[in-house]
Image 1 (tube, one colour):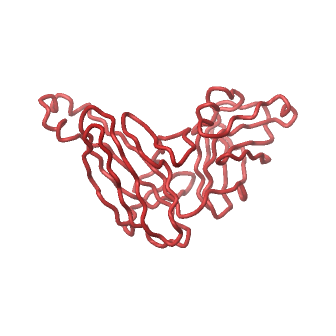
Image 2: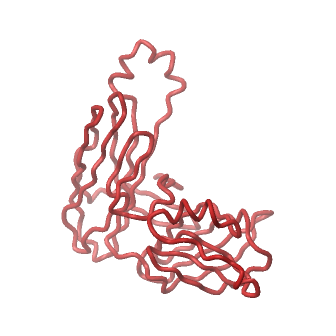
Length: 253
């Protein structure tokens, strides 16, 4: 079981566009599959100057006590489980997803391993103690994203840390970004964060009233997830946030 796996692709909001990290491209960065199951695929490419070895694993994803919980998805067939990418090459991971009646939620974990070139390198023993794996995670759902219904927001404190607790009482997963805590008395002077493909990046650069960690928040149906409040206006009573291209405002408890 793996807990608290981080997405690592924060701020990217177009699910059809590829994500690029450390010379590795992944497309799409978020998968929506049929409620009744069927085929799905994920493309992985490399712009590295040397070979890359990737291990693929798929986990059922749930959230318990505010943390992500991963268990092996034994009912999903996929291939390849390991593959090596030459410079400039691309590989397609093909999957067969079971019928979940719209309740399937998974994460596809791609771990970068030492390639055969690195293992055979004359410097492999010298570098072995410093070898670090890079992990890429793609979320996969058999349901549509939440339209904002059923979400509740609450300010909490844990020691000296203030947190924004988000509860999803709906039946669809929520993917929230560009969160702003606001005081209604100052609302007229508070600029709205941007929405769209580069919203996460622009929000971090242009919006200074609120700072949360993480900036992109997934809340699964029936779960509560908390984000650390690094910066916020005094006595906030409302929260605004984006889902896709839509902007929402809700009261704070």
